[in-house]
Image 1 (cartoon, one colour):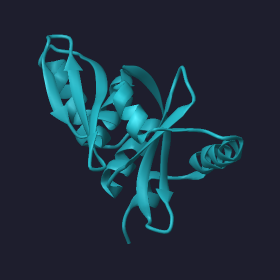
Image 2: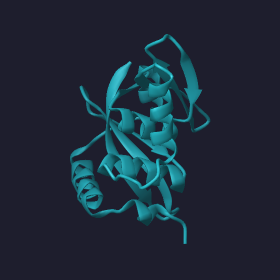
Image 3: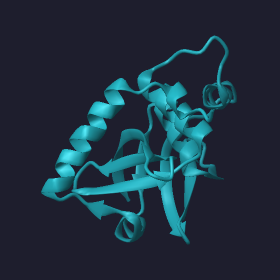
Amino acid sequence: MRELEIVGVRVEMPTNQPLVLLRELEGTRYLPIWVGAIEASAIAFAQQGTIAPRPPTHALMASLIEALGDELTEVRIVDVRDGVFFAELAFAGGAVVDARPSDSIALALRTGVRVVCAEDVLDVAGFAQTPDEDEEVAKFREFLDHVDPEDFEKP
């Protein structure tokens, strides 16, 4: 398993489909995962540290885990089949729960746990950055500095 950094969320053009971009910490590969608009907003809110007046779903999940006396230890992206990614939530008590990567990433951001990915998933779906892509990633980071979670809501 390789540890990943959550770079952020963006909207891919021309499809207008949101995606979350992850990068391996000790390597050069990036992993784009297309997500829904609601999940993109949840990830962006969590990444920005936005506090809602009432707990959104992923904050509720984090509170439930704590209230039940367990602890999320890591999020694992374990498979990709036909372009669909699969993740697991690993708990201190030994439980492992199947989950969507988008929900898992939003929960990881709210709980501060690491996100890891199976090497074979990175081999299939990851890409290594070229010098031209360095500029794209710099633009992406600039975009993240000026995006609001509401930007992902459908009109």
